Length: 483
Image: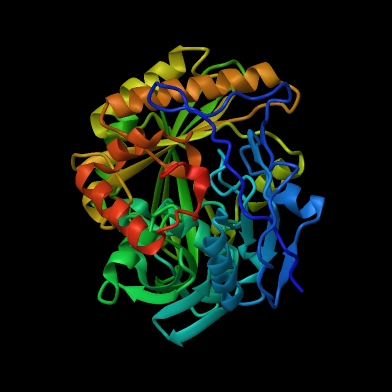
């Protein structure tokens, strides 16, 4: 039987800086620690659930951390649901008692977005069913990993149009923030290919929604940071999956030329995957590459003309692998990094085409801005392909997502603080250039920053949906959208 938990006491909020964005100052360990009060008023008994309602220290500590390693918010309880009905019951309970609640997928947010101090964390990993309503689409519960989805769909010769480059991420997690990958230049974000959702609203009501059925909830859930409802099932569109993929590395000396060639390739649409990559070399320099993937099954069938208009310096030999091997290529390294408990003060922003070169030049020429960066991913975006209102991209026809991958040694507290400060400055520069942050991989905004991020009309829609679907404002406090 579930254990009673206390009625929410007055919350201790972290005041963010008066500048554009910020996170709370870390303690000497380099971690922002927020814990529930020792003394809590009594509350009504928690509902009986079929799964596990956990209040032990180990379970709460697990839910208090994420992949970033900088924010540590201890909840009062963790629910591992046995069913969607468990989620509905616990949300209804939390709403009735004024307790904050959030869904946690694989804990890959970087700045505490899936944490809830003194609240309840729903561990979605126990909700992982995959079903087939017909041959062209798949129903996936929110806790399923994209690895689960890829295995199930590739077995039938199919794949979702956009797959993340980290297959251990959960379906509910990426759809709640947008979801991008190396096919984004052709297909937009993952949220652009969702047919239907099951959502538990902030009042504990289970709603099936789509573009034609309760469209407001559908649109405010996709990339909605969990503000209006907890996503528990998604119906995904599928396309034919290639059997194999050949990745051709092209090397560049000049940054501007690399960016212009990425724009050409994105407009061409003939390639299966495209990514730019700028990596730190052993001597402190930078190596620039375009990684272009083709899906011809034989070398003789591959297109020979897609490179003809490009201005690369030299080309390495292509590497061919099965499509599954290509999708799964980073799983082992990400798992190893998590096992070492490496802090991950990384950042992802999207900037207009003309804003990419100045930002990348600043990083490459400023030792403080570049501290800890070992790789920068550069993904071209065709902005018209992003159709969901809460997934924000810059203006213009073309843009770039820039992912600044940093590493911080566990004991290097001062270095971690410097990297966070460098991220703040990069966000400031990106926004000044007309850019947008990618919320799970960027420091939290204060309230006025979110209004600017979404724009006035979209912000009004989101605020109205919050009032309608989560009137007690209990859902997903970690992002600070309605703090």
